[in-house]
Length: 165
Image (cartoon, rainbow, N blue to C red; front, side, top):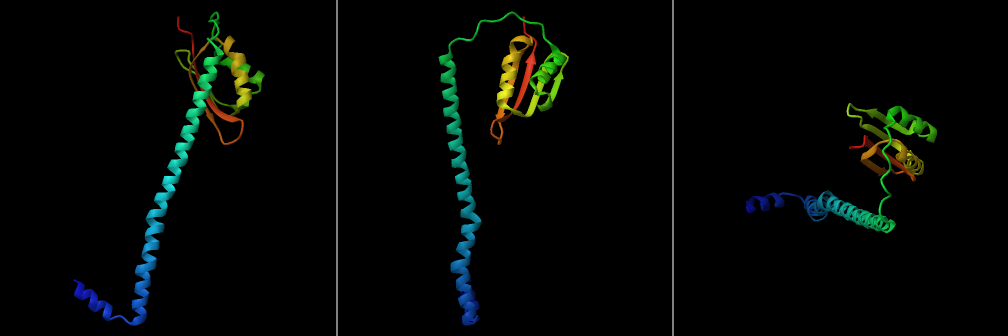
């Protein structure tokens, strides 16, 4: 095997041998570096950035939990109001100027109401939710709030259920 390789190299001219040496000594390591090592480093940097973000989120959640603990016990249960239905919720959305921001408002056979906002201002949404919650006659069964790239804007989804006796 090596004898055939030596014969093949001896058959090459001087320029061809120099070109082959450059290819082996320069181009091959560069190709290996750019083709294998650089993508690995980029993935490692992305993983480090994701870890830093996860740690920051964990710290933020811990701080919010401490704030909530400092606020004291939740307010006393209020008298159950009759559920206002999707029509009542829609009227309150219109009054708050949020009707255009809602992307889904539906009810199912069990009386559960689903609301979804793809893009809504956080302050307006939180104000509407705080003002409406005591009066709509529903319990929040599920709530999801997701920060968007635009400052002050969030995506929110709610599932409201009639109170269980």
